[in-house]
Structures are given as structure tokens and as C-alpha cells.
Amino acid sequence: MGFYEELKAKTEQLVQERGLEDYPVEVKGKVLKPVEAIGDPQRRDFPILKGKEFMVEADFQGCKGQAFTGEPQGFQGTLKEILTIPLREKSSGEKAAFIATLNAVMNYLNLADRTRHCHNEKPENCARELGSYIKEKYGNVRIGFVGYQPAMIDHLHRDFELRALDLNPDNIGKVKSGVLIEDGEKNRDEVVQWADILLVTGSTVANGTIEYFYSLEKPVLFYGNTIAGTAVLMGLERVCFFGN
Image 1 (cartoon, rainbow, N blue to C red):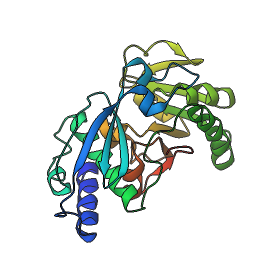
Image 2 (cartoon, rainbow, N blue to C red; image 1 turned 60 degrees about the vertical axis):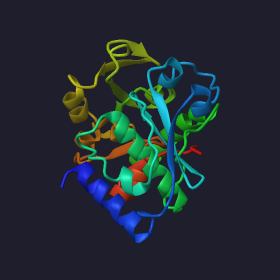
Image 3 (cartoon, rainbow, N blue to C red; image 1 turned 45 degrees about the vertical axis):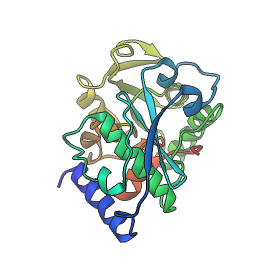
Image 4 (cartoon, helix red, strand yellow; image 1 turned 120 degrees about the vertical axis):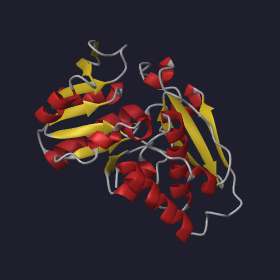
């Protein structure tokens, strides 16, 4: 069973066990404005502030769940209906709607927290906290960083050997936050082999690239709010210190 088949099966089982499948609920998705998603951080180079990424938010029984995506798409219906989405075949926008909904449901069931992005100064504080966490748990390791999160890259490269990968052609080949951003496709295998641990954006679960990373035979830490519910169901290590 592949990653998405297993995730969907576990989600369906959870929904059925909790009696939510046929319950008359409404799930809504909307694209958040940057200020809604991340507030007003001092650092201005987050992708969402530059219109390169979008945040989809699902509302399930008053509980919120979010997911980053480059192809925002909303959904309105029941859990039974959204569970019919064949995740592997669908676009990243439809995956993101499913993942955001899963986050909201997991939050509603008190099974996952920090399902919404942190605001204002907290992304910077999270980056500082992350360095301490890695140092304490893994020591002086080489980090392969996947995804462009400027605060984390900026703080981590001061204390660790770090190589960063991204898929955005506007970033590839440029020095950002003190680090050369390498091609997330062409240089992926080389960086993964070089690194002691991988720090991977949780957005990979929405764009489909998580299938490469989740079964690697070295420590993989997924960061952020997008992967909150998925991490619980799939037993993945997630770091997110200040999410809402």
C-alpha cells in the first residue's frame, strides 16, 4: 500500500470509528490572505508573502485546519464526500483541500494540535527553538533542508552544515538567507545522501513529493502545520513549536 492509500485508509477508519462519515457536517475551504495566514512578520521573504504559495483553510465544526499549496482549491461537502478524492491521481490543490480538512478533523478530535500557522514574530522564534531541539536530540549533524523557509535556513546554517533544496525556479541557484538554494529535483539524491538528517517541509504531503521522503533510512523531521494530522496518523516526526 502506497503512502496516500494508507493515509486515506487510516482517515476513513478514524472517521467511521467516530461516527462522522454520514454526520451532516459542512467542510469549507478558503484561500487565506497573507496577513491571515502568517500575520506581519519582520522578515519579508516568506513565500506566502510573495504570492508564491497559498494557504487553504478548512473549517470543521468550528475547528480549523490549514495546508500550504501552490494551487489553492476549496471544498464544500461532507467528510464522506471528501474521502472519495483519489489522492494519488488528483492535483495538489485537491490534495491540499483534503489535508486541510484532515487537520481540522484531527483538531476537533483532540488528536492533533498546531493545525494553523503561527503569526508575526513566532516563525522567527520557531527557527531559534528548532536549532536547540536538533542540537540536543541529534548533535552536530549535517542537515538536508527541503523547502524554502527563510527563518529556519537563516538560523540553522549558523550552527550546522546545511544544504537546502527547493522546487521554485525563482530560488534555485541563488543564495538565500546565507545558503545556496539547490534544485529540489536534480540535486535531491545527492543532498539526501550527504545529510545526516532531513528537515522537510510538511507541504510535501500536499504536493505529492512526500512519497520520496517518508521512508528514507535516516531521520526525517517534517516541519510546519500542513502535516499536523498526517504526522499523527502515519507516525511521522513533526516539529512545530508555535503553531496555533
